[in-house]
Image (cartoon, rainbow, N blue to C red; front, side, top):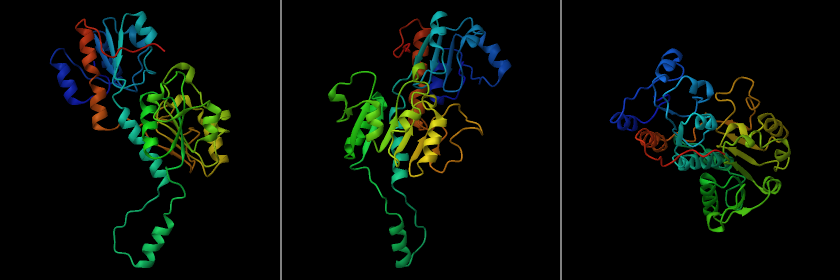
Length: 311
């Protein structure tokens, strides 16, 4: 069963060795009927694999997550049922990194596109009005989580002549830091011009970033999150943004998704909210969809290349 959209070529490859049925969980009756005979299930972000779903899937042997995060999959419940969980841990790293830098550069370098001939006075007025107060060179980037994405962020920060800081639970060898300096969280938030979040979905990260850390930020800091929405206290972030109109938050992930009219960050001029676009490139979509290779390995009695790890 494929519960969310995958790359067509990857679906075709899988269909060459087993019966493949595409059915969204929103088709409740049909979805439940198909679960009863499914041996494999492939999901992305919005299908919750929990005890309730597993109870309806007595033949299930493997769940494939087309992506990195596993917060929508109850891994211990799957393990208890003997169901393997596989994912694609490096499939969308480049896409996420590109999106974060694109959004940061949009914030720092205002621009217009000229579509007509202009007299000299208007030309000069445009140029003068678009002078950016800051540029990346000389700024400090603080990275929370120096994993795959975090390391790439550090590497590009060094290429832009930025100072890099990072905080991570695990020690990171110096040769993998790309010049970033390890510091405590309080120091990172206090010194950084830009803070970018790249931590995982372990339960202990829920609301990890709240009022005490936001209070440490500079009044004109840029705060970005392209990891998981639930790691931020959205109400605390909203309060900080209201108190610091020169600051900016750029968020690609939210809790919940989609968010409702009561989302604390809606309506704030200095909050830019995007609809979870980090993996929204054709290449990343295809890379994530190749989770079907590990699904097929498990169904064939082989060891998967990328099994999920319990945090």
